[in-house]
Length: 150
Image (cartoon, rainbow, N blue to C red; front, top):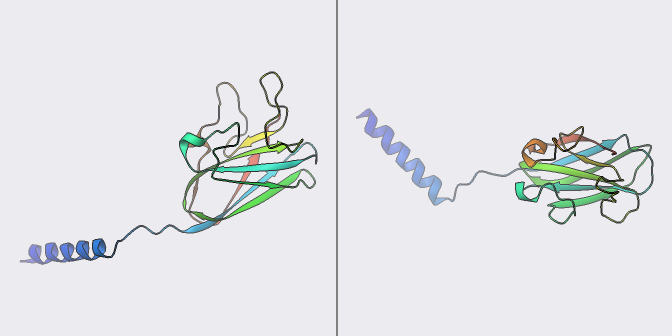
């Protein structure tokens, strides 16, 4: 008899949740990104935010979820992305010294500083990847991104 009561209670709960369109609530959070160690105050820092694996890394800055730029003061720059749904994100920054919105390259390597969340260096065997660069956002979060000059 006890099992029947538990099963009936479970069934009623399931029906109620389904009928009211129960969904896991996404919380909107801010994500602050800080960059220090910029070699000069020329140009701006471009901050690109990604939320899907197939968009990151994005050398041409066309597949981003949100993008912002900020001035450089004393080798430091910061932005805050407001009202982001909770989830996984990755950050890519560019010290855009010529303010053209693109990475200036030499033969192969960038001449301007770049950086990725959770990366201190990049190379042939350490290419940026969404799973490694990913930040799980559930609350108000601040991340530091290292600027890398080649």
